[in-house]
Image (tube, rainbow, N blue to C red; front, side, top):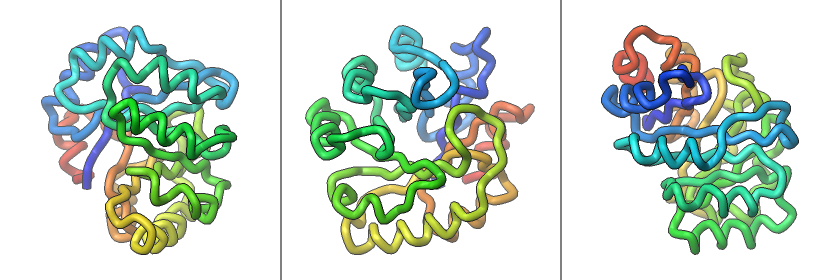
Length: 212
């Protein structure tokens, strides 16, 4: 299991130290939630801050765009050289074009499904992406409870991946903890995003190890 702590739950008054700490604690990715106040009712951080995070982090960035006009934001954050950029299927009208654009920038493309969005919607885009991010809470805020039917969704998606794109990863974001990590692993998740669970722990390394 790969672990991507979300800095949405970090102490923003000491963000540099927080990013260094999770990298030293053994995380696999640094997960960055970008929110525009339109697609979700919250605002987070822009490319100036993320560029600084990229310079500090010793692990690759995993950027999740919760925004309208995703192409504009992809171009804003591409210079930060993340490993992944994830865009929401619910927002993008020309998803295939945007996925190809992300890949042409040298970044691994990923598509995100909100809790209410069926995995069946991925039928014609799944062969073109490197990862699918399943939201296990409604996006916009950290610290929410895990939505249980995400487990069934992971299992169904895993079956689709087996036939259409066996190398595609499944990432799960929202309410992840040591209480549900076994369920997520057994269902087929490859990467978990954990914000409150990691940053709310007195020992980041121990929290990350418990998920792995």
